[in-house]
Image (cartoon, rainbow, N blue to C red):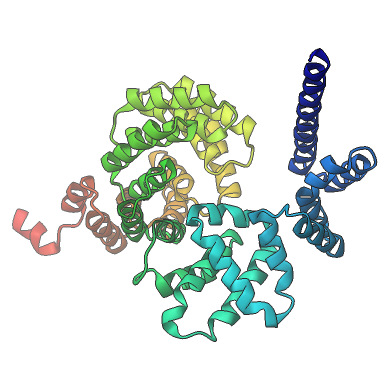
Length: 446
């Protein structure tokens, strides 16, 4: 009896030891793959084959992908055939096998049928699954599906439009992704397809349309934190900050991320809740202290709180983290100006123009300073450039009008002042009243 117990214990220990070895080996190989050391992973598996064939065989799905990623497709196909014989197939290896089948057009129906079966297991899982294929190959895959789809009746194409749209989206081909989504989304919308269309619309700066698609995704059952984050961003660009804050509140209830605190801090700043904005930005930085944008925006809030020395420190910290950050030199210039260092401010405004010549604020700030110093022609050069870049900012055309008043060009002065008024610049109304009286009005006054 005692011998039997000992025998059973040894067997159990052997099973546990074998399981541990497989787990340990998988961990090592996955670590090498995560570091893109695919050849090292292959070498490890092949070394393992010499001492523990069963453990090595369990790693063949990973070995197949290692060969795929380094472009040794013949070897990858051999691994896939062994996997199939040993019943080691997974959804990942099935997808890779389907990719290799697209070299033959005669396989199109089988490939697309198998893809539809994988999709039926769940759109979200399928969308995540296809990331294992390289972007270039995803695009090739999608083109293959397009050719097959064109041979079908219109009513049978929907599912393949969907599959192709997912492939194109993951391949960063937004144009084709948009075209495929448009082909079915009005008739057969799904939560994921609506969400992807919302992302594309946001990238195209069509924010109202993006919000509409995000709403549709939510109505169809998508409740992820990322959905509420992306919808909040789109609403923010539409200046619907209070609604954006509500979405970010929901996102934070679902998943606590530094990015969500940062975005909510930005929105709170826009609705003038500066202390709350500062709290959120502080929280974001405590959670992730390596992102220049977080410090940059905390500096903006400090400007609004009139803590100019603190703002300058934040902007300089952001610059050290990311010397190529857009707009940072303009912000540093503003902080220097508020701290009374005008020459340093001008220096950074000019650096900003050199680095980001399409950004109107630095031209405006230099134009404003030159106007205040009585350098009207220099002011006009900067302000007219600012107006070209941002024609809807009334303060630019207001000061431009005042420059032309000083230069005694009444026609241009009054033209720019009217543009400023049309843009909603209230101080321009009194300036126009003062400087743009007609000759008849002057005679009546006299």
